[in-house]
Image (cartoon, rainbow, N blue to C red; front, side, top):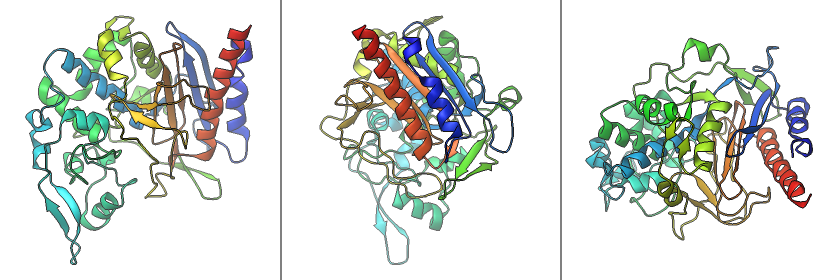
Length: 395
C-alpha cells in the first residue's frame, strides 16, 4: 500500500504552502512496525537545519494517555480504586473547593464540593478542573489572583478551585496532572521514574522525559507563534528541566518514533516488545466510552496566543475513554467508529485504530492550538492513509 499513500506530498505541501508550517514529522504504524516515517521542512523557521524523523518535541497533552496507562496498571494490581476519593492517594486534592463566581470585590466565591473527586472523574475530565486557555474562570484567576500556569510545573499551579461538582459535566483541564499525583502517591516514586520502569522500558522507548537533557535539546524542534496574518515567529520556549511536579497532563518531551511505540502497545492489546504494559482485558475496558450520554464539545480558545476555538470532527458525537477521545461514528477521514485519539497544544495529533490495527502521529511545534495549516495537514494525512487502505482492500 506504500505507493498509494502520498504522505510525502502532504508533508511537502504543508511546509511550502502560504501560510505554512516550519517543519513536521509524521508516522503511521501497523501492529508490528512503522509503515510510514516522514519529515519535511526545518526545525526553526529562522534556521536551515532540516527536520528529521528523530527530532524531539514538547509533546504536551499527548502525555496524558501515558499517565492514564500508568494509572490503569495500578488498577490492575489492586492498588488504585477508580471510584475511591482521589484524596486517598493525593491528599491535597481534598482541599479544593468549587468556585461559584466572583463577588463584587472580585474575590472568588467558594464552597465545598457535593462529592469527592475520584480518579475516574480525573481520567474522564469530569473532575471540575480546567485550563486558563480554555476557561474564562481560570483565566480570570490567573490574571487577577496570580494563579500560576500549569506550564510552571509547580504544585501551586494544580491547587485550583473546581468549576463544578465532580462528575457533573465534561471539561478539559488539569485533571490528568492530578492523576500523576495519584500515581506518585501510590508508588512513592516520581512520575518519570514510574514511566521509565513500567512503560518506557517494556516498550523500548529511549528518549521520552519530563526533564529535557542536552542530548534531546540538540535535536529539539523549535516552537513558533502563528500571527493573525499567517506569519510564523520563532519562540524561545522550553518547559523547565527542573520541574517541581512531573506534569502528567503535558510535561513530556519525546520523539514521534517513541510515541509510535506507545501507540503500537495499544494496538497490541497492551503488549510491548520487551514485556506487557497492560492486560488485554484492561485495554478492552479502557478504550470504551466511559462518559455515558455526556458528550464532549468544542474547546473555546480563551487565550488567543495559546489556542483557537478547536474541535475534532464538528457535528460528530464524541465521547471519552481512559483516557482518549472516542469518535462515536465513523469520522470524515475514514477513522472508524470507536477509534481513539487526541492532541497536544503545539499542534501534535494522533489516532489509534484498534479495529484495523493502525495508528498515526503528526508533530509540529506551533501555537496557538488548532493551527489551520498544521491541523488541516494532519486531517489530510489521516484521510490519505484511509483512502490508501480502502484502495488496498479493493485491489
